[in-house]
Length: 107
Image (cartoon, rainbow, N blue to C red; front, side, top):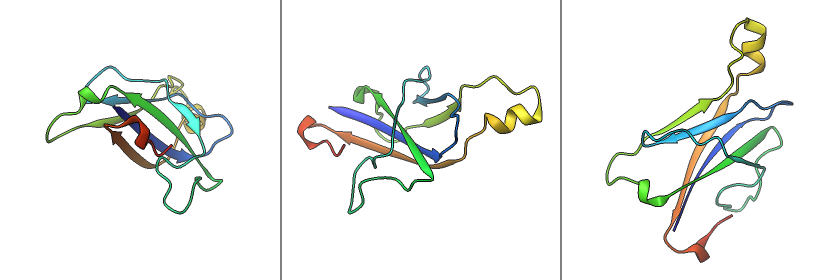
């Protein structure tokens, strides 16, 4: 079984640290950067202006009914406006992929 949450952001020269908290758990900052769509449907890659980060989670964390995803910016450079602008990212989308069968992976 596999649970992947993909966060798509506008591409920047220097990307700040991005983390995901799933269902109130401690944030995962181990996202792998990629230009590939989570599940291709005709297209296989994000547009050049975007990049994505894939975060893997234990599927047993999925709750029946309500699940929460919190995207976090791990930067602590918030003292001056100019630093804040450099460390800010614009989220384009958040995608979720779950499969019970490892052979069904879209990636």
